[in-house]
Image 1 (cartoon, rainbow, N blue to C red):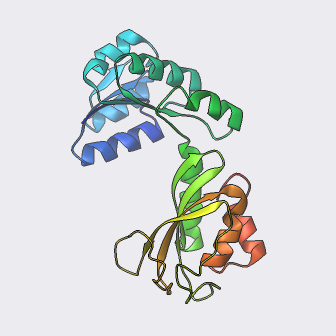
Image 2 (image 1 turned 90 degrees about the vertical axis):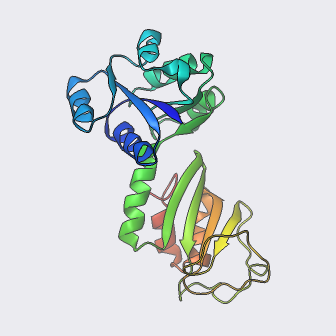
Length: 233
């Protein structure tokens, strides 16, 4: 596939590296000269300029791109670039800052194919690693929803339950289950939960601490602190 990535900062460059490693073709757009030089040192094709300008997007090959990722820290640039890319039939992914309120998210979510806020996921990933790897953020679905992978511990009150016996809060849904060292699968109600099993759960931020208590076995105060406000921070 062919991609145009706007922004060669931390988020854009990391995304570009992953896409290139997977064999995709991509062009970066960046207006900061220092960031342009850094990306070029890594042998990326870079168009220098403002990614919210149609002529710059055309120079980057938006006409033949499958998708455009507007990943700068400037919301206005990102939104404008996505609107232009939509005109060319591209899939659009727009970065927003986690500080934006939910109504701002909803305003833009209807206009693009996907909205991402990598600062939140980056913070989540760092904290999860520090906590020992029993909880791993997979994706933010919306400002109030997150998909997480949780690992059953010996302290989990649900250790030994079958999947059919496991009752999560109303605003949480199990998406997949995997035994230790085995791939994730659709949950089977007769499968028992054992130490090291993984559950992929879609949950509202408000119930994440309850889910963590059930699956990971955290104490209520610890689970609430780790869940934080607005996600697992």
